[in-house]
Length: 329
Image 1 (cartoon, rainbow, N blue to C red):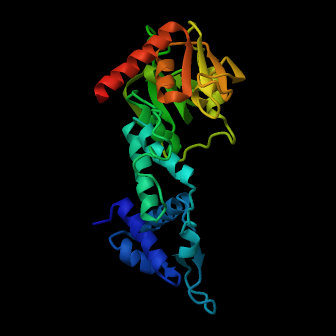
Image 2 (cartoon, rainbow, N blue to C red):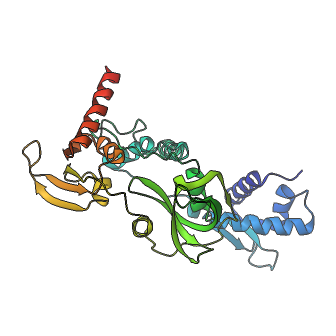
Image 3 (cartoon, one colour):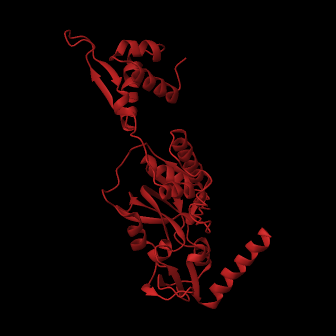
């Protein structure tokens, strides 16, 4: 019975890593492809080689004996395949720890935790508890992604798969089938957007994930396209996404060196103003909205952000902080 593809690739990699000399093609077939016909073996072996190379494996081809013109063999040199030693400063390790707590998406949270476990196993000192002590125990930011298709779009971006999905352009509009090469996912004005090239419209487009109809998207073949070199996903989202709804402006004091998520969407930033502690290491940041998304951002930055106006935003933040205190008590 043929081996499953993932198991076959892993065993092929191990075989080529542990051998000091080039492994003949026939030996590879004998061990891993014994149940395949000649044609099937050639087809699978070619695909498996390309798969390993696409994953960054430095697969070498050469002669077992340079004095004889025998059949080429294959190998992977451990020194070329292994990663260099990682050295992290304490603040870098703390940031990696915080990454495990930032994402509320199960897929993203699991990915960051798995990355930290691998670093820790390799002897890299990382804070698996989330960097609380290194960062002074401040309130930590959160990135929520409640849209059911978020993980699917994220996987499509990572694997370079074009996607098809039904999309409702406005609240009461009829869903339309769209075909997109996704370049990335960006958060703008409190909403998640997928950015990419619309194959039906022959132009770059953004789509709000909350308006994707249904819980499933259809993904095409892996590595079917390449995003434009140097494309700025955030810039495309800001340029093409609808502007945030008009409303009362939010005026905030943001401590220097923090609040980047707030500064990114700011309509105005005044550098070097007096803060609540009479120090001038604060900036005045003005946003064109003051909705619940802004309140969540303010809360995520803890003592590094103070609401000056409007009073409704300040009341929302204070009420949520009081609830947190009550729960903690």
